[in-house]
Amino acid sequence: MSSVKVGFYGHVRQYHNLQNEIDAAIHEVLESGSYVMGPKLKQFEKDLSAYCGTTEAVGVNSGTDALWLAFMALGIGPGDEVITTSNTFFATAEAIWIAGATAVFVDCDPKTCNIDVNLIERAITPRTKAIVPVHLYGQPAEMRAVAEIARKHKLFVIEDNAQALGARGPDFTLGELSDAMCTSFIIQKNLGCFGDGGAVLTNRADLAETVRRLRNHGSPKRSVHSMGYNSRLDDLHAAVLSVKLKQLDNWNDRRRKFARQYDEGLNGTSLKLPTALPGYRHVYHLYVVETEARDNLQAYLLERGITALTHYPIAIHQQEGFPWGHQARIVGSLTHTEASAARVLSMPMYPELTGEEVQAVIDATVAWDKTPAGRSKAANP
Ligand SMILES: *Cc1c(COP(=O)(O)O)cnc(C)c1O
Image (cartoon, rainbow, N blue to C red):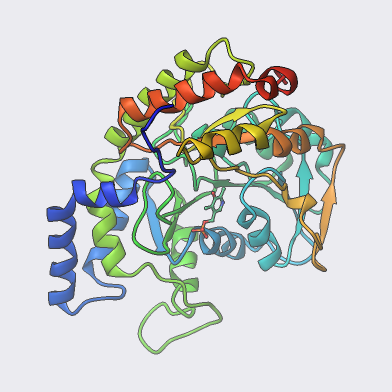
């Protein structure tokens, strides 16, 4: 049995790798006395919009806030419908409900687990206001098709890009084909701070201006207010994020390298491995395999000191109490979403892994595949 223990996160390793730069950035903010809406926030917004190729970036308090503030800024609210998927982190739909709108779920494409673009049009009604594609696991949704449907039906597109910063399509960048793109900086995302943070990215100056007001009590200038909220990205986190952003491409390259190692090492097992669409730069926020014997594989790995987690084992529409008095509609069946919830397992995937650790996960998984449980129940889905 391998003695290599492999955890699910590399947060502390990441901090140690950049400790001097991060400590200096934090110290500078502390000494400056500018902690909220200061120069580090402005600088990070510049850095992030330059990185993403959008004209505007607005730092907010979380990815969830980024989404609902974007909905608010676009005037999406009660009576409106927003089309998205149910196999995503809960916050995608939660933000729709916070805005007061109706979440409309269509099934995912079983290959990518992203929204099945062929199912969107039949979900459109006169109340539909927007489509929210999620770039799940680090792979862009098929944005050309989403944008074409949105153009034809005059809908807004808000990208939930909490998981794929630095990814791109074959002929589009993320943030290019939508009204707004929302991201999260909670530590487990590809770019993470030491607490909560998020941003709205857009090429629409009017929209950026509205989100800037909304995040700060509806205030265009000192002492002047209209209805808004308090959802600011603080300067400490902005300063840390500017340091880390410089590493993001390098980190994503390491994720892609480890994904290739997994692909090669697990090829030939009964597991369904992730599919990267041709020409897409998938940044493997998560490396998700599928097997009918998911719980058995997860327990087997854990016994060998390897932590694999599930994203997401309960789809939003399967959560107890759904939809909690809010409005939701399911169009067609969510067969693939439900099948995937029962089968997904996320292998350790972060830039601070070593090739040896990835190999230990591969070896344990290949050994599991030869056990009776692996052989009998792990029919390739
Ligand atoms: C993390 C995440 C969010 C929410 O971000 P928070 O910063 O935790 O509020 C929204 N959507 C998706 C797909 C996510 O992964």
